[in-house]
Image 1 (cartoon, helix red, strand yellow):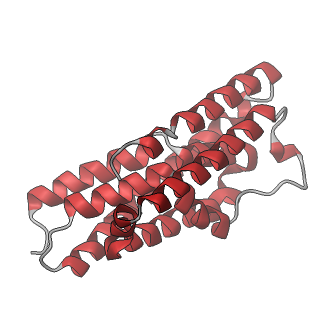
Image 2: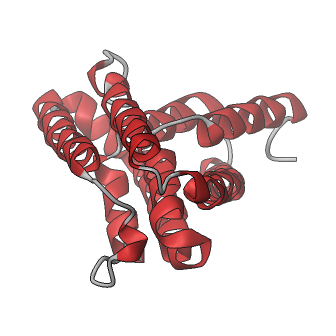
Length: 202
C-alpha cells in the first residue's frame, strides 16, 4: 500500500474541507450558477478541476521550491492575484441585474477557469500544503498521482454543490434588494479570500 490508512484519511479530510469551504472558485461558481444555470456552468466546473490538478502537479514537481528560492516571484504573484480578485469583486458590486437575461453575456470558459487557478490564492495554499504535508517521499510520483486523483473527486463535488446552490437561489434574486445583498456578500467573500495570499506560509 503506497499511502498509510491514517495519512490517507487525514488527506481526505483536508481535501474535503478545503474543497467545500468558500473561496474564489466556489464563490465564482455560485455566481455562475445564479447567472447562467448549472448546465452552462459545466465547462467552468471542469476547468476548475483540471486547472487545479495541473497546479498541484506543478507544485509537486518543484514549483513551490522555486518560490522559496526566489520569493520576489511569489510576491509578484500575490499582488497580481490581489488586483485581479479586487477587480472581480468590484464588477460583482456594480452588477444590477442577473446576467442570464443578457444574451451577450457568457459564463467563464474551460480555459479561463483553468488559467484562473494560477491567480487563485486558496488554490496555491491548498496545493503547497497538500504536497509538503501529505505525500510520503517513498514512491513520490505514485503518491502524487493518488493525491491529485482524490483532489479531483473532492474539487468536482464541491464545485457541483456550489453551482447547484447558485442555480437554486436564482429564483430569489429577481428582486433588486435581494440581488444587491447577494452581490455585496459575494464581493465580500472574494475580498476575504485574499487572506491566504498574505500568509507567511507558502
